[in-house]
Length: 368
Image (cartoon, rainbow, N blue to C red; front, side, top):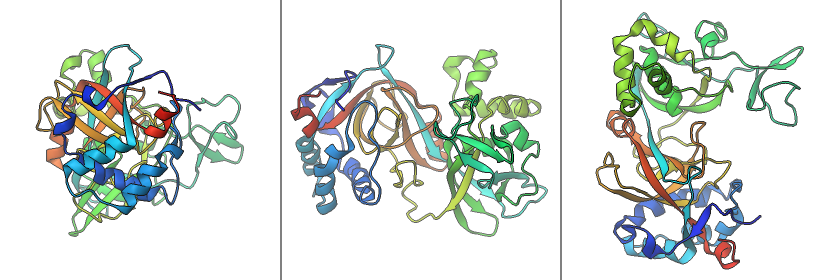
């Protein structure tokens, strides 16, 4: 496999603000991936950044820790070469933000806490090209096992109307349906339980249908102008129109199932698709079909100020993915956990340039 023409080789001197970044913070996130791959390697993305080419930087990251920012920057410069990632549109790429919500929850259903978060049902099965029934939508990666064979799983509307009632799948109960929906969107949450515990739920599986965001629906129906669509404006619209919540949310047929997970380090986020805890401000979700987990990306977003700096120029590590994250120059920045992180993540939608840091072994072969 060779590198795609989507990569245009650059030098570190071409990266705006490269010398000013905190490379030590990025190294800490990279090191977590370096240890994980001893258990299970990452899959190489279709753009050709081969997982095997990370062997040398991963080995060094496991054995040493840079003493300061300068040493961390040297680590990345020795092992990688930057390449500008071309967006499919021909223009700039796009960054959005995500976070881990923190909400109050109950271990049992009560009059106030009546909205469940569900665990994976026993009849939900993985499907791929090897076992997908003829005629089933090729997008579906999950299905429902029946005596007659696999069929499309119940969608959000059916599940919220009771299709899975009585199966004892409830992990916890929330007070607000909109809170539950945004936990589905983020794929994880910290739960402040009414019995005093702090718990975490994280993604386990989904019903499989395509994601349709409420922001898109509300903008297309002229309820909220597209340029004003944020998590905050969507929440405000739902609060003002409680009678229409189901109407809008059920148009997103995808439904997420969760599993319980410990909160081992309150400073870190949940374990995500790359199987390491997310690092606030340093982990980015990318299109995993195109890119390889563990790849460092230097992201430059001149108009982005929500992270406390403008312009945003920061080295991030690819450690998550999402159904809405599609395209070579597309990223979702992890802002952290709790309401403050939500305020940051909810307003991020900015043009950005993506510079992939490609292992030098690939560049030396003349592939970039």
